Length: 242
Ligand code: APR
Image (cartoon, rainbow, N blue to C red; front, top):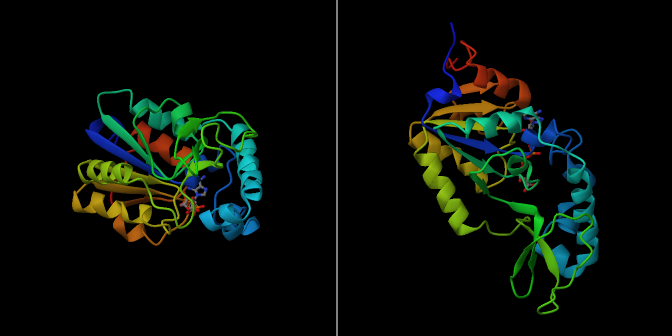
């Protein structure tokens, strides 16, 4: 006997965080080996730090580019991408900036916190894709301002349109699967509430309990690749709310 498969749902949202890419080798932010344990975000990941010392902030982000460039999408990314190739509408709402969902073939992706491989002029706002590491050109051709990573740092606002689309999609999905987020960073951490209001079946994949765990019907305590494999295989007991 097999339980519900991903294909049994019409509109699925995968809501992903750093734990999604952990098995690809991308360090998470918090917990063991978390990047904010080693690097103080106040020195490397906020606008004030960039205004004070853009070169130091770039050094940190070039280090992150180097780390991510050495990583490939994992089985979990590929399972999500495959789910989106069927008739089911699958959207990835991700907090990750690593670009691994796109690399694995997912097409419908909302990047809440931007993308490490895109830069934005801090003065004139023009944007540019740049897949190279390290990013060497630090001054805008057009206006001479500093390029900065087009990502959401601490204290930055999320893009309004992206957040709005995420809320709409999450409100109207029938399966909401959170994968590998500590659920402590807002406004992203608030999004699962929209799935609850919309009556989607809510699944949390995370080896650990989180402050948002009570919002979920089903808790899959284990690594993303293993739990997404079981979900895609239609493991009979998996979606029984315990
Ligand atoms: N599979 C699933 N989950 C995992 C795995 C794994 N293999 N390994 C770790 N996790 C879980 C951890 O238990 C933790 O709950 O992933 C979560 C990672 O949490 P964070 O490092 O806080 O990452 P995230 O929730 O994405 O952070 C949110 O914080 O600093 C900001 O902008 C940054 O987007 C980021 C935001």
